[in-house]
Image 1 (spheres, helix red, strand yellow):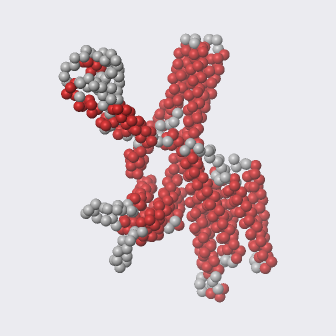
Image 2 (cartoon, helix red, strand yellow):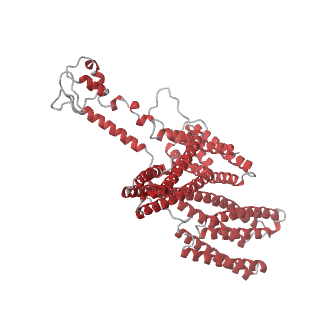
Image 3 (cartoon, one colour):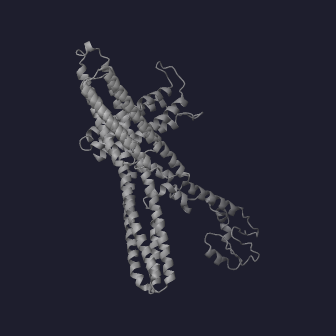
Length: 609
Protein backbone atom coordinates (compact mmCIF):
# COMPACT_ATOMS: atom_id res chain seq x y z
CA UNK A 1 0.00 0.00 0.00
CA UNK A 2 2.94 2.31 0.70
CA UNK A 3 4.13 1.65 -2.85
CA UNK A 4 0.72 2.67 -4.19
CA UNK A 5 0.97 5.93 -2.25
CA UNK A 6 4.42 6.71 -3.68
CA UNK A 7 3.24 5.92 -7.21
CA UNK A 8 0.35 8.32 -6.73
CA UNK A 9 2.66 11.11 -5.58
CA UNK A 10 5.02 10.42 -8.48
CA UNK A 11 2.07 10.60 -10.86
CA UNK A 12 1.19 13.98 -9.41
CA UNK A 13 4.73 15.23 -10.00
CA UNK A 14 4.68 14.05 -13.61
CA UNK A 15 1.29 15.60 -14.31
CA UNK A 16 2.49 18.80 -12.68
CA UNK A 17 5.46 19.09 -15.02
CA UNK A 18 3.41 18.56 -18.21
CA UNK A 19 1.76 22.00 -18.31
CA UNK A 20 5.16 23.65 -17.93
CA UNK A 21 6.26 22.18 -21.24
CA UNK A 22 3.13 23.50 -22.91
CA UNK A 23 3.60 26.89 -21.29
CA UNK A 24 7.16 27.14 -22.59
CA UNK A 25 6.08 26.08 -26.08
CA UNK A 26 3.01 28.26 -26.37
CA UNK A 27 4.65 31.03 -28.36
CA UNK A 28 6.28 29.37 -31.39
CA UNK A 29 9.35 30.84 -33.11
CA UNK A 30 8.69 33.55 -35.69
CA UNK A 31 10.34 31.54 -38.49
CA UNK A 32 10.27 27.80 -37.75
CA UNK A 33 12.78 25.66 -39.66
CA UNK A 34 11.65 24.36 -43.02
CA UNK A 35 9.97 20.98 -42.88
CA UNK A 36 9.24 21.23 -39.15
CA UNK A 37 5.64 20.18 -38.40
CA UNK A 38 3.60 22.67 -36.39
CA UNK A 39 2.90 21.67 -32.79
CA UNK A 40 -0.80 21.30 -32.01
CA UNK A 41 -0.80 22.87 -28.55
CA UNK A 42 -4.54 22.44 -28.21
CA UNK A 43 -4.23 18.68 -28.64
CA UNK A 44 -1.33 18.62 -26.16
CA UNK A 45 -3.42 20.50 -23.61
CA UNK A 46 -6.30 18.09 -24.13
CA UNK A 47 -3.96 15.18 -23.46
CA UNK A 48 -2.85 16.87 -20.23
CA UNK A 49 -6.52 17.28 -19.36
CA UNK A 50 -7.10 13.54 -19.76
CA UNK A 51 -3.99 12.71 -17.74
CA UNK A 52 -5.05 14.96 -14.90
CA UNK A 53 -8.59 13.60 -15.03
CA UNK A 54 -7.18 10.09 -14.49
CA UNK A 55 -4.96 11.41 -11.71
CA UNK A 56 -7.94 13.04 -9.98
CA UNK A 57 -9.87 9.78 -10.21
CA UNK A 58 -6.93 7.84 -8.80
CA UNK A 59 -7.01 10.07 -5.71
CA UNK A 60 -10.46 8.73 -4.92
CA UNK A 61 -9.61 5.11 -5.84
CA UNK A 62 -6.50 4.96 -3.64
CA UNK A 63 -8.39 6.73 -0.87
CA UNK A 64 -11.02 3.99 -0.96
CA UNK A 65 -8.28 1.35 -0.70
CA UNK A 66 -6.71 3.10 2.30
CA UNK A 67 -9.97 4.00 4.03
CA UNK A 68 -9.88 1.12 6.54
CA UNK A 69 -6.16 0.48 6.97
CA UNK A 70 -5.00 4.12 6.97
CA UNK A 71 -8.00 6.44 7.43
CA UNK A 72 -5.88 9.56 8.01
CA UNK A 73 -4.06 9.19 4.70
CA UNK A 74 -7.31 8.31 2.93
CA UNK A 75 -8.83 11.49 4.31
CA UNK A 76 -5.87 13.44 2.94
CA UNK A 77 -6.51 12.01 -0.53
CA UNK A 78 -10.18 12.93 -0.34
CA UNK A 79 -9.28 16.48 0.69
CA UNK A 80 -6.79 16.77 -2.17
CA UNK A 81 -9.40 15.61 -4.67
CA UNK A 82 -11.95 17.99 -3.17
CA UNK A 83 -9.52 20.88 -3.38
CA UNK A 84 -8.71 20.03 -7.00
CA UNK A 85 -12.38 20.01 -7.91
CA UNK A 86 -13.06 23.19 -5.98
CA UNK A 87 -10.26 24.96 -7.87
CA UNK A 88 -11.88 23.88 -11.19
CA UNK A 89 -8.54 22.75 -12.59
CA UNK A 90 -10.08 20.52 -15.25
CA UNK A 91 -12.41 23.26 -16.52
CA UNK A 92 -9.48 25.67 -16.67
CA UNK A 93 -7.56 23.16 -18.79
CA UNK A 94 -10.51 22.95 -21.17
CA UNK A 95 -10.53 26.74 -21.46
CA UNK A 96 -6.81 26.71 -22.27
CA UNK A 97 -7.34 24.08 -24.97
CA UNK A 98 -10.05 26.28 -26.53
CA UNK A 99 -7.75 29.31 -26.50
CA UNK A 100 -5.01 27.32 -28.26
CA UNK A 101 -7.24 26.00 -31.06
CA UNK A 102 -6.11 26.75 -34.61
CA UNK A 103 -9.38 25.56 -36.15
CA UNK A 104 -12.97 26.03 -35.07
CA UNK A 105 -15.69 23.36 -35.02
CA UNK A 106 -16.36 23.77 -38.74
CA UNK A 107 -12.67 23.36 -39.62
CA UNK A 108 -12.05 27.01 -40.52
CA UNK A 109 -8.67 28.36 -39.32
CA UNK A 110 -8.68 30.66 -36.30
CA UNK A 111 -5.87 32.55 -34.59
CA UNK A 112 -4.80 30.96 -31.29
CA UNK A 113 -4.74 33.30 -28.29
CA UNK A 114 -1.33 32.60 -26.79
CA UNK A 115 -1.30 35.46 -24.29
CA UNK A 116 -4.54 34.60 -22.46
CA UNK A 117 -3.64 30.89 -22.65
CA UNK A 118 -0.30 31.56 -20.96
CA UNK A 119 -2.01 33.54 -18.19
CA UNK A 120 -4.50 30.74 -17.57
CA UNK A 121 -1.69 28.17 -17.64
CA UNK A 122 0.24 29.98 -14.92
CA UNK A 123 -2.86 30.06 -12.72
CA UNK A 124 -3.47 26.35 -13.30
CA UNK A 125 0.12 25.55 -12.31
CA UNK A 126 -0.32 27.45 -9.04
CA UNK A 127 -3.48 25.49 -8.25
CA UNK A 128 -1.88 22.15 -9.15
CA UNK A 129 1.14 22.88 -6.97
CA UNK A 130 -1.22 23.60 -4.07
CA UNK A 131 -2.84 20.18 -4.55
CA UNK A 132 0.54 18.47 -4.74
CA UNK A 133 1.75 20.33 -1.65
CA UNK A 134 -1.30 19.05 0.19
CA UNK A 135 -0.55 15.46 -0.92
CA UNK A 136 3.02 15.76 0.34
CA UNK A 137 2.03 17.47 3.59
CA UNK A 138 1.60 14.32 5.69
CA UNK A 139 4.91 12.72 4.68
CA UNK A 140 6.61 16.10 5.02
CA UNK A 141 5.19 16.60 8.52
CA UNK A 142 6.43 13.17 9.56
CA UNK A 143 9.88 13.83 8.10
CA UNK A 144 10.17 17.26 9.71
CA UNK A 145 8.96 15.94 13.07
CA UNK A 146 11.58 13.17 13.00
CA UNK A 147 14.32 15.64 12.04
CA UNK A 148 13.27 18.03 14.82
CA UNK A 149 13.51 15.18 17.34
CA UNK A 150 16.99 14.27 16.02
CA UNK A 151 18.31 17.84 16.22
CA UNK A 152 16.82 18.31 19.70
CA UNK A 153 18.62 15.18 20.89
CA UNK A 154 21.93 16.36 19.39
CA UNK A 155 21.42 19.79 20.95
CA UNK A 156 20.78 18.19 24.33
CA UNK A 157 23.99 16.15 24.14
CA UNK A 158 25.94 19.19 22.94
CA UNK A 159 24.77 21.23 25.94
CA UNK A 160 25.92 18.44 28.28
CA UNK A 161 29.39 18.36 26.70
CA UNK A 162 29.64 22.16 26.86
CA UNK A 163 28.77 22.12 30.57
CA UNK A 164 31.31 19.38 31.33
CA UNK A 165 34.02 21.08 29.28
CA UNK A 166 33.45 24.32 31.20
CA UNK A 167 33.73 22.39 34.46
CA UNK A 168 37.04 20.89 33.34
CA UNK A 169 38.29 24.33 32.35
CA UNK A 170 37.32 25.80 35.75
CA UNK A 171 38.95 22.87 37.55
CA UNK A 172 42.13 23.38 35.53
CA UNK A 173 42.15 27.06 36.51
CA UNK A 174 41.93 26.17 40.22
CA UNK A 175 44.36 23.24 40.24
CA UNK A 176 48.05 23.51 40.98
CA UNK A 177 48.87 20.05 39.66
CA UNK A 178 46.97 20.18 36.35
CA UNK A 179 48.07 16.67 35.36
CA UNK A 180 45.32 15.36 37.64
CA UNK A 181 42.76 16.88 35.29
CA UNK A 182 43.97 14.80 32.37
CA UNK A 183 41.57 11.91 32.98
CA UNK A 184 38.57 14.25 33.34
CA UNK A 185 39.45 15.97 30.08
CA UNK A 186 39.90 12.58 28.40
CA UNK A 187 36.37 11.55 29.39
CA UNK A 188 34.93 14.73 27.86
CA UNK A 189 36.97 14.13 24.70
CA UNK A 190 35.63 10.56 24.51
CA UNK A 191 32.05 11.84 24.83
CA UNK A 192 32.75 14.33 22.06
CA UNK A 193 34.12 11.57 19.85
CA UNK A 194 31.02 9.42 20.47
CA UNK A 195 28.77 12.33 19.55
CA UNK A 196 30.72 12.80 16.31
CA UNK A 197 30.40 9.10 15.47
CA UNK A 198 26.67 9.29 16.17
CA UNK A 199 26.28 12.27 13.82
CA UNK A 200 28.32 10.51 11.12
CA UNK A 201 26.11 7.44 11.36
CA UNK A 202 22.95 9.56 11.13
CA UNK A 203 24.32 11.48 8.16
CA UNK A 204 25.15 8.25 6.37
CA UNK A 205 21.62 6.96 6.90
CA UNK A 206 20.11 10.26 5.75
CA UNK A 207 22.34 10.33 2.69
CA UNK A 208 21.28 6.81 1.73
CA UNK A 209 17.64 7.71 2.28
CA UNK A 210 18.04 10.83 0.12
CA UNK A 211 19.64 8.83 -2.69
CA UNK A 212 16.76 6.35 -2.63
CA UNK A 213 14.26 9.20 -2.80
CA UNK A 214 16.03 10.89 -5.70
CA UNK A 215 16.34 7.63 -7.61
CA UNK A 216 12.53 7.36 -7.58
CA UNK A 217 11.93 11.02 -8.44
CA UNK A 218 12.93 12.11 -11.98
CA UNK A 219 12.24 15.75 -11.19
CA UNK A 220 14.81 15.79 -8.36
CA UNK A 221 17.33 14.04 -10.58
CA UNK A 222 16.95 16.75 -13.20
CA UNK A 223 17.20 19.51 -10.58
CA UNK A 224 20.34 17.91 -9.19
CA UNK A 225 21.95 17.73 -12.61
CA UNK A 226 21.17 21.37 -13.34
CA UNK A 227 22.07 22.83 -9.97
CA UNK A 228 24.84 20.66 -8.51
CA UNK A 229 27.85 22.87 -7.87
CA UNK A 230 30.10 19.85 -7.41
CA UNK A 231 29.63 18.60 -10.94
CA UNK A 232 32.92 17.66 -12.62
CA UNK A 233 32.39 20.16 -15.42
CA UNK A 234 32.66 23.04 -12.96
CA UNK A 235 35.56 22.17 -10.73
CA UNK A 236 37.89 19.91 -12.69
CA UNK A 237 40.80 21.33 -14.62
CA UNK A 238 40.66 18.39 -16.98
CA UNK A 239 37.18 19.46 -18.07
CA UNK A 240 38.11 23.08 -18.75
CA UNK A 241 38.46 24.16 -22.36
CA UNK A 242 41.89 25.06 -23.59
CA UNK A 243 40.88 28.68 -23.87
CA UNK A 244 40.56 28.82 -20.08
CA UNK A 245 44.10 27.54 -19.53
CA UNK A 246 46.73 30.29 -19.64
CA UNK A 247 49.34 29.98 -22.38
CA UNK A 248 48.04 26.60 -23.56
CA UNK A 249 48.23 27.65 -27.21
CA UNK A 250 51.71 29.02 -26.87
CA UNK A 251 52.96 25.84 -25.30
CA UNK A 252 51.53 23.79 -28.15
CA UNK A 253 52.90 26.12 -30.82
CA UNK A 254 56.31 26.33 -29.18
CA UNK A 255 56.69 22.60 -28.84
CA UNK A 256 58.85 22.12 -31.97
CA UNK A 257 61.19 24.87 -30.80
CA UNK A 258 61.41 23.41 -27.35
CA UNK A 259 62.78 20.19 -28.82
CA UNK A 260 65.78 22.12 -30.17
CA UNK A 261 68.90 22.18 -27.94
CA UNK A 262 68.79 25.12 -25.56
CA UNK A 263 72.03 26.98 -25.10
CA UNK A 264 70.99 28.50 -21.78
CA UNK A 265 72.39 26.61 -18.80
CA UNK A 266 69.91 25.02 -16.46
CA UNK A 267 67.14 24.95 -19.05
CA UNK A 268 66.83 21.18 -18.79
CA UNK A 269 66.56 21.39 -15.03
CA UNK A 270 63.94 24.08 -15.35
CA UNK A 271 61.97 21.94 -17.76
CA UNK A 272 62.02 19.09 -15.26
CA UNK A 273 60.89 21.34 -12.47
CA UNK A 274 58.17 22.87 -14.62
CA UNK A 275 56.62 20.09 -16.70
CA UNK A 276 53.64 22.31 -17.59
CA UNK A 277 55.92 24.58 -19.59
CA UNK A 278 55.68 27.67 -17.36
CA UNK A 279 58.83 29.67 -16.80
CA UNK A 280 60.23 29.78 -13.30
CA UNK A 281 60.12 33.05 -11.40
CA UNK A 282 63.85 33.52 -11.87
CA UNK A 283 65.86 32.55 -14.92
CA UNK A 284 69.64 32.35 -14.84
CA UNK A 285 69.79 33.43 -18.46
CA UNK A 286 67.74 36.52 -17.74
CA UNK A 287 69.45 38.62 -15.09
CA UNK A 288 67.06 41.51 -15.70
CA UNK A 289 64.04 39.47 -14.64
CA UNK A 290 62.52 39.00 -18.05
CA UNK A 291 61.56 35.47 -17.04
CA UNK A 292 58.93 36.53 -14.47
CA UNK A 293 55.79 34.49 -14.05
CA UNK A 294 53.31 35.23 -16.80
CA UNK A 295 56.01 36.17 -19.35
CA UNK A 296 57.85 33.87 -21.73
CA UNK A 297 60.69 34.40 -24.12
CA UNK A 298 60.47 32.94 -27.59
CA UNK A 299 63.50 31.71 -29.58
CA UNK A 300 63.96 35.10 -31.22
CA UNK A 301 64.51 36.68 -27.82
CA UNK A 302 61.30 38.71 -27.84
CA UNK A 303 59.11 38.60 -24.74
CA UNK A 304 55.53 37.62 -24.98
CA UNK A 305 53.15 40.11 -23.45
CA UNK A 306 51.32 39.45 -20.17
CA UNK A 307 47.98 39.58 -21.95
CA UNK A 308 47.72 35.81 -21.93
CA UNK A 309 48.15 35.79 -18.16
CA UNK A 310 45.52 38.49 -17.78
CA UNK A 311 43.15 36.60 -20.08
CA UNK A 312 43.69 33.44 -18.09
CA UNK A 313 43.00 35.27 -14.83
CA UNK A 314 39.80 36.71 -16.24
CA UNK A 315 38.67 33.28 -17.36
CA UNK A 316 39.52 31.85 -13.97
CA UNK A 317 37.58 34.64 -12.23
CA UNK A 318 34.61 33.95 -14.50
CA UNK A 319 34.72 30.28 -13.60
CA UNK A 320 34.91 31.09 -9.88
CA UNK A 321 32.02 33.55 -10.14
CA UNK A 322 29.92 31.03 -12.05
CA UNK A 323 30.70 28.35 -9.49
CA UNK A 324 29.83 30.66 -6.59
CA UNK A 325 26.51 31.52 -8.19
CA UNK A 326 25.62 27.84 -8.41
CA UNK A 327 26.38 27.11 -4.75
CA UNK A 328 23.29 26.59 -2.61
CA UNK A 329 22.33 29.31 -0.22
CA UNK A 330 23.47 28.86 3.38
CA UNK A 331 19.93 28.98 4.70
CA UNK A 332 19.06 25.83 2.79
CA UNK A 333 22.38 24.01 2.91
CA UNK A 334 22.28 23.37 6.67
CA UNK A 335 18.79 21.97 6.50
CA UNK A 336 18.80 20.06 3.20
CA UNK A 337 22.35 18.70 3.14
CA UNK A 338 22.79 15.09 4.32
CA UNK A 339 25.74 16.33 6.37
CA UNK A 340 24.74 17.84 9.71
CA UNK A 341 25.88 21.44 10.03
CA UNK A 342 28.50 22.03 12.72
CA UNK A 343 30.16 18.62 12.41
CA UNK A 344 33.47 20.29 11.56
CA UNK A 345 33.28 22.44 14.70
CA UNK A 346 32.72 19.33 16.80
CA UNK A 347 35.81 17.70 15.33
CA UNK A 348 37.83 20.85 15.94
CA UNK A 349 36.64 20.88 19.56
CA UNK A 350 37.79 17.28 19.99
CA UNK A 351 41.22 18.11 18.59
CA UNK A 352 41.51 21.06 20.98
CA UNK A 353 40.66 18.71 23.84
CA UNK A 354 43.36 16.27 22.72
CA UNK A 355 45.88 19.09 22.66
CA UNK A 356 44.72 20.20 26.11
CA UNK A 357 45.33 16.67 27.39
CA UNK A 358 48.94 16.82 26.15
CA UNK A 359 49.45 20.24 27.78
CA UNK A 360 47.98 18.99 31.05
CA UNK A 361 50.34 16.03 31.00
CA UNK A 362 53.25 18.44 30.45
CA UNK A 363 52.08 20.77 33.27
CA UNK A 364 51.56 23.62 30.77
CA UNK A 365 48.59 25.16 32.56
CA UNK A 366 48.11 28.34 30.50
CA UNK A 367 48.38 26.52 27.18
CA UNK A 368 45.95 23.86 28.36
CA UNK A 369 43.43 26.51 29.42
CA UNK A 370 43.77 28.16 26.03
CA UNK A 371 42.99 24.86 24.25
CA UNK A 372 40.05 24.27 26.58
CA UNK A 373 38.66 27.73 25.81
CA UNK A 374 38.96 27.04 22.12
CA UNK A 375 37.12 23.74 22.58
CA UNK A 376 34.26 25.56 24.33
CA UNK A 377 34.12 28.11 21.51
CA UNK A 378 33.89 25.41 18.86
CA UNK A 379 31.15 23.64 20.82
CA UNK A 380 29.22 26.90 21.13
CA UNK A 381 29.44 27.30 17.35
CA UNK A 382 28.04 23.77 16.94
CA UNK A 383 25.20 24.66 19.30
CA UNK A 384 24.39 27.80 17.32
CA UNK A 385 24.27 25.87 14.06
CA UNK A 386 21.96 23.24 15.54
CA UNK A 387 19.67 25.90 16.97
CA UNK A 388 19.44 27.55 13.55
CA UNK A 389 18.53 24.25 11.91
CA UNK A 390 15.91 23.65 14.60
CA UNK A 391 14.39 27.08 13.97
CA UNK A 392 14.18 26.45 10.23
CA UNK A 393 12.61 23.02 10.77
CA UNK A 394 9.99 24.46 13.07
CA UNK A 395 9.13 27.03 10.43
CA UNK A 396 8.67 24.20 7.91
CA UNK A 397 6.54 22.30 10.40
CA UNK A 398 4.39 25.37 10.97
CA UNK A 399 3.90 25.94 7.25
CA UNK A 400 2.92 22.30 6.74
CA UNK A 401 0.49 22.53 9.65
CA UNK A 402 -1.10 25.70 8.24
CA UNK A 403 -1.49 24.04 4.84
CA UNK A 404 -3.13 21.00 6.41
CA UNK A 405 -5.57 23.15 8.40
CA UNK A 406 -6.50 25.22 5.37
CA UNK A 407 -7.24 22.07 3.37
CA UNK A 408 -9.42 20.72 6.17
CA UNK A 409 -11.39 23.93 6.45
CA UNK A 410 -11.78 24.16 2.68
CA UNK A 411 -13.24 20.68 2.59
CA UNK A 412 -15.60 21.49 5.47
CA UNK A 413 -16.64 24.73 3.79
CA UNK A 414 -17.53 22.94 0.57
CA UNK A 415 -19.65 20.42 2.49
CA UNK A 416 -21.37 23.13 4.52
CA UNK A 417 -22.23 25.20 1.47
CA UNK A 418 -23.89 22.14 -0.04
CA UNK A 419 -25.80 21.54 3.21
CA UNK A 420 -26.97 25.16 3.28
CA UNK A 421 -28.14 24.96 -0.33
CA UNK A 422 -30.06 21.75 0.35
CA UNK A 423 -31.66 23.18 3.50
CA UNK A 424 -32.87 26.26 1.66
CA UNK A 425 -34.18 24.13 -1.21
CA UNK A 426 -36.04 21.77 1.09
CA UNK A 427 -37.52 24.67 3.06
CA UNK A 428 -39.02 26.09 -0.13
CA UNK A 429 -41.17 22.98 -0.62
CA UNK A 430 -44.77 23.85 0.03
CA UNK A 431 -46.29 22.36 3.17
CA UNK A 432 -49.02 20.61 1.19
CA UNK A 433 -46.50 18.96 -1.14
CA UNK A 434 -43.99 17.85 1.50
CA UNK A 435 -45.44 14.42 1.98
CA UNK A 436 -45.52 13.82 -1.76
CA UNK A 437 -41.89 14.98 -2.28
CA UNK A 438 -40.57 12.96 0.67
CA UNK A 439 -39.64 16.02 2.72
CA UNK A 440 -38.68 14.03 5.82
CA UNK A 441 -36.26 11.78 3.92
CA UNK A 442 -34.53 14.75 2.26
CA UNK A 443 -34.17 16.55 5.60
CA UNK A 444 -32.72 13.41 7.17
CA UNK A 445 -30.13 13.03 4.38
CA UNK A 446 -29.06 16.63 4.91
CA UNK A 447 -28.88 15.95 8.64
CA UNK A 448 -26.47 13.05 8.00
CA UNK A 449 -24.22 15.32 5.94
CA UNK A 450 -24.23 17.82 8.78
CA UNK A 451 -23.28 15.10 11.27
CA UNK A 452 -20.34 14.07 9.07
CA UNK A 453 -19.14 17.65 8.90
CA UNK A 454 -19.48 17.95 12.69
CA UNK A 455 -17.24 14.89 13.11
CA UNK A 456 -14.62 16.54 10.88
CA UNK A 457 -14.85 19.71 12.98
CA UNK A 458 -14.36 17.69 16.17
CA UNK A 459 -11.20 16.06 14.75
CA UNK A 460 -9.82 19.46 13.80
CA UNK A 461 -10.60 20.77 17.29
CA UNK A 462 -8.48 18.01 18.84
CA UNK A 463 -5.58 18.92 16.53
CA UNK A 464 -5.78 22.60 17.48
CA UNK A 465 -5.89 21.86 21.19
CA UNK A 466 -2.89 19.57 20.82
CA UNK A 467 -0.97 22.29 18.96
CA UNK A 468 -1.81 24.73 21.75
CA UNK A 469 -0.46 28.02 20.38
CA UNK A 470 -3.80 29.56 19.43
CA UNK A 471 -6.62 30.82 21.63
CA UNK A 472 -9.24 31.98 19.15
CA UNK A 473 -9.02 29.11 16.65
CA UNK A 474 -9.96 26.31 19.08
CA UNK A 475 -12.79 28.43 20.44
CA UNK A 476 -14.02 29.22 16.93
CA UNK A 477 -13.96 25.57 15.91
CA UNK A 478 -15.70 24.55 19.13
CA UNK A 479 -18.51 27.08 18.59
CA UNK A 480 -18.75 26.01 14.96
CA UNK A 481 -18.99 22.39 16.08
CA UNK A 482 -21.84 23.29 18.44
CA UNK A 483 -23.58 25.17 15.64
CA UNK A 484 -23.30 22.08 13.44
CA UNK A 485 -24.80 19.91 16.16
CA UNK A 486 -27.59 22.46 16.59
CA UNK A 487 -28.33 22.38 12.86
CA UNK A 488 -28.32 18.57 12.85
CA UNK A 489 -30.74 18.50 15.78
CA UNK A 490 -33.12 20.93 14.10
CA UNK A 491 -32.96 19.03 10.81
CA UNK A 492 -33.81 15.81 12.65
CA UNK A 493 -37.00 17.60 13.73
CA UNK A 494 -37.53 18.77 10.12
CA UNK A 495 -37.03 22.39 11.16
CA UNK A 496 -35.55 24.03 8.07
CA UNK A 497 -36.74 27.58 8.71
CA UNK A 498 -35.02 30.89 9.28
CA UNK A 499 -33.28 30.01 12.56
CA UNK A 500 -31.70 26.87 11.09
CA UNK A 501 -30.52 28.72 8.01
CA UNK A 502 -29.05 31.57 10.10
CA UNK A 503 -27.00 29.10 12.12
CA UNK A 504 -25.81 27.47 8.91
CA UNK A 505 -24.70 30.84 7.56
CA UNK A 506 -22.74 31.46 10.77
CA UNK A 507 -20.90 28.17 10.21
CA UNK A 508 -19.90 29.29 6.70
CA UNK A 509 -18.77 32.70 8.00
CA UNK A 510 -16.58 31.05 10.62
CA UNK A 511 -14.95 28.77 8.08
CA UNK A 512 -14.34 31.59 5.60
CA UNK A 513 -12.75 33.78 8.28
CA UNK A 514 -10.46 31.02 9.50
CA UNK A 515 -9.41 30.17 5.95
CA UNK A 516 -8.63 33.83 5.27
CA UNK A 517 -6.50 34.03 8.44
CA UNK A 518 -4.58 30.87 7.50
CA UNK A 519 -3.94 32.10 3.97
CA UNK A 520 -2.64 35.37 5.32
CA UNK A 521 -0.25 33.51 7.60
CA UNK A 522 0.96 31.32 4.74
CA UNK A 523 1.57 34.43 2.65
CA UNK A 524 3.57 35.98 5.48
CA UNK A 525 5.51 32.73 5.80
CA UNK A 526 6.51 32.84 2.15
CA UNK A 527 7.49 36.51 2.38
CA UNK A 528 9.63 35.85 5.45
CA UNK A 529 11.37 32.98 3.68
CA UNK A 530 12.20 35.24 0.76
CA UNK A 531 13.45 37.88 3.19
CA UNK A 532 15.67 35.36 4.94
CA UNK A 533 17.20 34.31 1.63
CA UNK A 534 18.07 37.96 1.11
CA UNK A 535 19.58 38.20 4.57
CA UNK A 536 16.77 40.28 6.09
CA UNK A 537 14.64 37.58 7.70
CA UNK A 538 13.01 37.94 11.09
CA UNK A 539 12.22 35.16 13.59
CA UNK A 540 8.89 33.47 13.04
CA UNK A 541 5.96 34.12 15.38
CA UNK A 542 5.60 31.28 17.92
CA UNK A 543 1.79 31.23 17.58
CA UNK A 544 -0.36 29.66 14.88
CA UNK A 545 -1.60 33.07 13.69
CA UNK A 546 -0.77 36.59 14.81
CA UNK A 547 -2.61 38.37 17.60
CA UNK A 548 -4.53 40.65 15.27
CA UNK A 549 -6.05 37.68 13.44
CA UNK A 550 -6.97 36.13 16.80
CA UNK A 551 -8.71 39.35 17.88
CA UNK A 552 -10.65 39.52 14.63
CA UNK A 553 -11.81 35.96 15.11
CA UNK A 554 -12.91 36.65 18.68
CA UNK A 555 -14.86 39.68 17.47
CA UNK A 556 -16.55 37.49 14.86
CA UNK A 557 -17.48 34.90 17.50
CA UNK A 558 -18.98 37.60 19.69
CA UNK A 559 -20.98 38.85 16.75
CA UNK A 560 -22.30 35.33 16.15
CA UNK A 561 -23.48 35.08 19.76
CA UNK A 562 -25.25 38.41 19.32
CA UNK A 563 -26.96 37.26 16.10
CA UNK A 564 -28.18 34.03 17.69
CA UNK A 565 -29.39 35.89 20.79
CA UNK A 566 -31.45 38.26 18.66
CA UNK A 567 -32.88 35.39 16.61
CA UNK A 568 -33.92 33.41 19.67
CA UNK A 569 -35.52 36.58 21.04
CA UNK A 570 -37.48 36.88 17.79
CA UNK A 571 -38.61 33.27 18.02
CA UNK A 572 -39.75 33.73 21.61
CA UNK A 573 -41.70 36.85 20.66
CA UNK A 574 -43.45 34.95 17.87
CA UNK A 575 -43.90 31.87 20.06
CA UNK A 576 -42.95 29.85 17.00
CA UNK A 577 -40.77 27.22 18.64
CA UNK A 578 -40.72 24.74 21.45
CA UNK A 579 -39.97 26.41 24.79
CA UNK A 580 -37.62 23.63 25.91
CA UNK A 581 -35.68 23.96 22.67
CA UNK A 582 -35.35 27.71 23.17
CA UNK A 583 -34.16 27.29 26.75
CA UNK A 584 -31.51 24.81 25.64
CA UNK A 585 -30.19 27.24 23.02
CA UNK A 586 -30.15 30.09 25.56
CA UNK A 587 -28.20 27.93 28.01
CA UNK A 588 -25.76 27.04 25.25
CA UNK A 589 -25.29 30.73 24.40
CA UNK A 590 -24.51 31.49 28.05
CA UNK A 591 -21.80 28.81 28.09
CA UNK A 592 -20.38 30.14 24.83
CA UNK A 593 -20.20 33.67 26.21
CA UNK A 594 -18.32 32.48 29.30
CA UNK A 595 -15.82 30.53 27.19
CA UNK A 596 -15.28 33.47 24.88
CA UNK A 597 -14.64 35.68 27.88
CA UNK A 598 -11.97 33.27 29.15
CA UNK A 599 -10.39 33.04 25.68
CA UNK A 600 -10.20 36.83 25.46
CA UNK A 601 -8.53 36.99 28.87
CA UNK A 602 -6.04 34.25 27.95
CA UNK A 603 -5.15 36.12 24.79
CA UNK A 604 -4.68 39.40 26.69
CA UNK A 605 -2.22 37.85 29.19
CA UNK A 606 -0.41 35.80 26.53
CA UNK A 607 -1.12 32.34 27.90
CA UNK A 608 -0.83 30.91 24.39
CA UNK A 609 2.82 31.98 24.06
